[in-house]
Length: 307
Image (cartoon, rainbow, N blue to C red; front, side, top):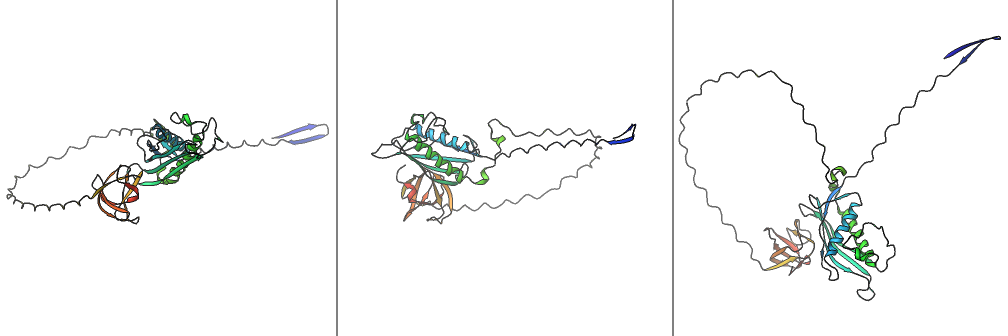
């Protein structure tokens, strides 16, 4: 805007600058990406340690589930899981159970597909501790009711070391393809968005009347069919191989292969306690039949003569 001012000494011109345009609004911040999660079920752990009550298996399974949930990569669910964790507690002893020994916890653990039983990871996780350094209230994951009696002892420290080792085995063995569930779908009670129903079609004019059909032609007589010859008798099935002994799977999981030796292709993975009818034995291997009728080879080292 230009203003003209007049005075005694003559005319003076003053220029006032235009105000600057307002700055454009800042773009909204992008929402943080949410990692996809895997659905996993932690089965009750069998306790085979003579110094541990059966409730320890429930407490360790619950504690492992809490540790995996804290990684924000797993949904712990008792049903519709894609992965299973099975375990056997083989050691659970406080410090001094034998002279000079620390507190010890050992779990034979397996990670497998819930539908096919394919094994993605297995091994023995351990925890040892001879002191209580670093323990205190508020540690995560919590011990829970089944393990609370060991709080503040060196056995608590050994438990936490074993659970940490178990969580590393599971996270390291989970294939990337199993992380496919969104956080929304993972929350209990969450539902997928439902699309609105399609709009009703606009009314249309009635279709034209169909033309009259001509009267059908009289049926044509057909010759009687010639009967087919009787089917040939089915060949008699061959008799199954004779059973020469009985074994049982003693490891949490074991592979049934199409040939003896580790080069044999894995046909199916079977679980601990499965009965095996022995058909043939070689050095370190048995050809067996499992309850569903499949036959294959299994290593002697993962079997035992009794359940």
